[in-house]
Length: 255
Image (cartoon, rainbow, N blue to C red; front, top):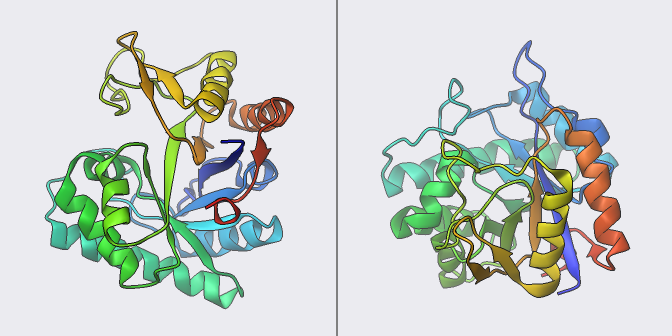
């Protein structure tokens, strides 16, 4: 595959608290995952981020999370499939209102944090999330971890799916991300991160923490916008992917 979408989590400021450099990073990504007020974000931030994404011609995504502001949506909560359906449906509706008011369209849905990782492993949660999208708009693309239950659920319901890989995370032998509370979960060397992405896109392979090569499909790569070097890394990965002959496009133009 010679195409890749670059996505970034955005709109995560809340009230008096400012997080990330959305306006600057939007120059180097093609898709924005916008928080909807559950794990981060608020109505004013949602509106501003939607406006910025449209100004930069960046695809707009709903980024639904668990109701966990204190834990930033990264703590597992034992929710039922019905609760997952309602949470996702609610957050799609919230962001859709701002997008419609600004004359735009929702491109994709990418669950956030713990909800994303739980749905990667749990078939019932994954299907509930896919069903929520189907019940709103069949044209919305579902982002999910490569080889995950979430992508299987998207296929089952006839959605377009985007297999997502991560620039700054390491992988386990079963294709899941190394949990953040375990050693060597994050890749801090930018050179290593960029090389991992290029290999995933061009060769369809990634080296796991166990030293085993596994196959992986990369339609979109996630970069994080809240780190201290987020902006410089966004510039770097955009430049180096292009230099490697990889075309960077919005996911809606790829699949």
